[in-house]
Structures are given as C-alpha cells and as structure tokens.
Length: 456
Image (cartoon, rainbow, N blue to C red):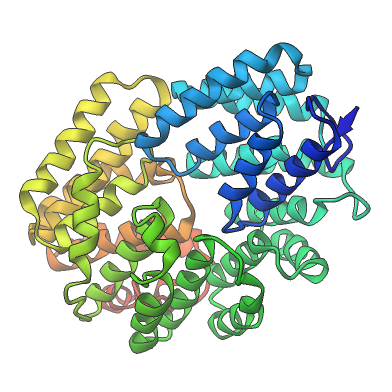
C-alpha cells in the first residue's frame, strides 16, 4: 500500500514513486509554489491511472475562479471517474466533491469535504480545499467550524501541522477572534517561517487592529521566504502597501504597485495576468489611491482590457465589482454596461445560492461602482444601500470588501447624505476594532459628522 504524508491510503498504480510525486504536488499546493504545474505534470506522467492525480487537476483548474478553465476541470473529472473504480471510498468522495463544484453546487461540495473530514480528520487536501472554497464564497463561520472539529486530531508530530494552524488562525481572524488567530498564527510561523498562509493570517490581524508599523516590519522580515512562491506573494505585498496607505505614504504604495504586486514585467504576472487575487489587489489599490487624490495615470488601461475580456464570467462574485472598478477607472462606459448585462444574464440561468449572491450582492455593488465612476453619487448610494448587509456573501476578506464600503462613504459624502453616512460610520465603529477616525478611508467622513472616537 501507498500512503500520503498523513498516513492515509492512496490508490496509486505505480507504487512509491507515484506516492512521492503526489506528496510533492500536495506540498506545492499548500506552500503556494510557483512550480505547482510542473509538480502536477510529473505526478500525471508517473501514474496516469491514479484517481487523485486527476482530482488535483480538477481542483487546481477550479481554484482560479475562471470560467475558461471549466473545460479542463470537466476533462479531469471524467478521467477521475474513469479510474475511481480502483479508488478508496475517501478518494471517490473527492471525485464527488469535484463534480459538485464544477456543477456550481457549492453547498454540496462543501458538505462532501466535511463528510470526508468527519471520517478522516487528517485529510489535509479536503481541509485546505474546503477552507479555500468557504472563504471565497463568504462563509467564514463554516471555515471556523470545520477547523475546530479537526484540530484535536492533529499535533506537531504530523507533517502539515503548520498548515492546519494557519487555517485555524485565518478562520478565527475572519470571525473576529483575533487573540485566538494570533496565537495559532505565531505557532505556525515559529515552526515554519515560510508558511505563507500563516503569514497572511497574522497580517490580517495586524491590519484589523491598526498595527501598521508592526505589519510592515513583519512582512519585510519574512519576505526572503517567498522567493519560490507563486502569485500569492503579490497579495502579501498588497497587504504591505495597505499598511503604507494607512500611513499616507503614497509613494511607497505606488512603488509596491509597480515593482511588486502589479509588476507587468514579472513572469508570474505575464503567465496569468487576470488571476482573480491579482485583479483584486490592483483595482482596489488604484481606487483607494484615487479617493485620496493620487492619479493612477494609465495604470487602469491594462486592467480595463482584462475586465472587458472577462465579461460574462461570473464564477467569482467578488471579482465582478472589481472588474467594474477597472472599467470605470478607464472610463470604458460601454463595456461597463455590458458587464452589468452579463451579470443579469447569469442571474437568469444560475440556481440557488449562486443566483442569490449575484442578484443581491454582486449586481447592486457593481451598479454602485459604475454610478460612482460617472459621478452620480446619490444614485450610487441608493444602489449600494440594499447590498450593504449582503456584502460578505461576495466572498473574500473584510480587507478586500472594504474598498466598496469606502466607495459608499465617498458617495454619501459627495451627495450630502449625512444621515446615511452617520449610520454607516456607527456600523463601522461597532464592527471594526479600529474606529473610523483612525482609518484613512473613513477619517474625513468621521470628521464631517463629528465622530471623534478612535477605538471601540
């Protein structure tokens, strides 16, 4: 028999060499390695009849949240189903989860991963894919529930333990439990400073608590460990830029934009210029800078070109209003209207939760972004108001969604909606550890309504 790194049986057909290749591919995924594609290709070449090699191909095709990859995912699923006859029950469950994910039945996919973990709490692939999917579809409580259930079955004697700690840290952070998040995050970093997800979790804690100097120093210290990382290091550089933005160090922000997280000469960026996280990084940062009078120059243009090419792809709800930021920033009004039509048309054919997210969150937020870009500020406020309570359903983190909260505040300020502004600032005061008066995107509005509290 062949086993994965955590001692679970895997049904390779070529023995130990395929087992080694599988473990190498899983490590590449968990550690955000830039050579993940090569690792997967090696696994497929080593054992083309191994069901989990095809499951990984399907999972990795789905993770970029790009509709053009669905064909690859479906081909991988067909191969996985072909070889599932030789697989364990756990592996066949992974095949089923992939099928549900491709079909858009996210709740069922998450439930299957949860069933796997109930029987095999050390299935690190099921845990990590569940964690990732729940995060991008706005379900932090589900992330936390699952990591809490499996933690008793893990220890520092098991390979992959720091990944579990990192997931524990991030799930607690997104649920507002910052002390627990920090404890788990530091435990992971102290054992493994190259754990990018733990780095990310701790960075979020520092961002939410306004620890800007500490955040910059922390990321600078760990950056040498990112040399072999994929595009996820761009996101960590974006977080560093966010700390500089809060310190109003706009030159440093632009330098990080051009030389780090949106370096157009980077082989990583050139290989996948429209990767969702890179798009969120770039569009949200340019808009934040624009709110503070910093001219983005022609930086919007390449993002708007990418946005226009992705119209009709509604696989990632959070990406849609970010694409709209790019189109509005470049004043591509006709393409912006086509983007809205694409969301409406997708709403008519989607089902269940995906349909509700598009209708109740992605569409109104995207409309509000477009109206703000056209300087129709009162209409932008009215468009966004019904979606404010639904914002989390877009997915992603508090930090990523906050750009739309700032857009709403700016529109309310410019349209003289002080009543709405005051209510929204009170909401921010109650839900964020740092008061509006001490956050760059909120401070002017807080002064405008006479809100002087710095901390809750």
